[in-house]
Length: 327
Image 1 (spheres, rainbow, N blue to C red):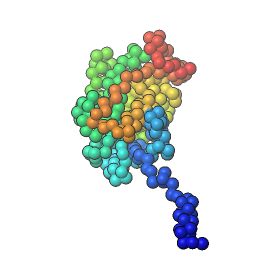
Image 2 (cartoon, helix red, strand yellow):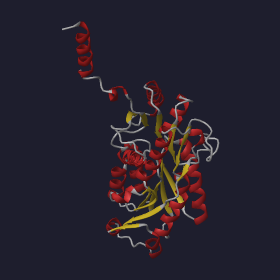
Image 3 (cartoon, helix red, strand yellow):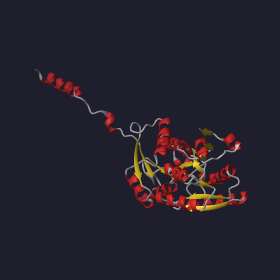
Image 4 (tube, rainbow, N blue to C red):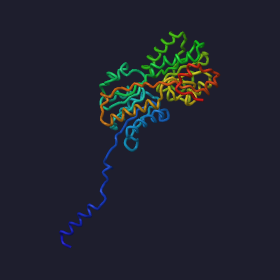
């Protein structure tokens, strides 16, 4: 064989050998998910988040990866967990609730942060304005703080003769709790009812709070939408049933699992909106220019089976306003 033919054969063989797949060198975006809870407590949130991402073309494990960090209700761990996410090179951090948002904000001024909070983020100092956040934070305002007073009005409409109403507040969420309590107390004075505030920031404290309310013989209970309370659906509903306390919640998922009534929004829907914002950032938009989403879909949901178990008659006006009645 001549030398020239030999070289030609080597070249053909080289091209014939399997080449490394280019796809092995491509990377998919990495999202950081920072939670004060656990995988179980955040199941509904993650369902909504993944739906929003999927609607925008990002399927977890295919188009995007998510790095999870769980504080297990130990809030002093959040800053370290946020720092760890930044070190992992995440493209954006999802921060459910104010404690996680503050931890992420204190950790980075460059990595985009998509928050979900229940009080005006301008009032909280998270963004410069709703239309133009101006920094590395944007997200969803679930207006839960404003719904506390409206929820009290629903309780009073349900039980107009009851003059003592319990109000469960999260002692670990002070920044929002103070604003929420202020609004509820003002609404109570306006309609002439007495409010008995009980605080809870752990599972055991929730149990103690219900025992206290039962001893105080409150006529009803209002549980506002709160990042911690919303992760304790089954516990709160079971305690309300055990002590036979008519309870109105701030999240529609509560009556879906047996709670009496809710006046508020859907957790899954809120986090779907957050997922849409995350996708926009992954596609190149800057959080400084992404307006904060203001939720507008507020629903009244009634569980008629629970009402019958409590021997309650739902006023016709409430029935007429209900978005959904569970029979």
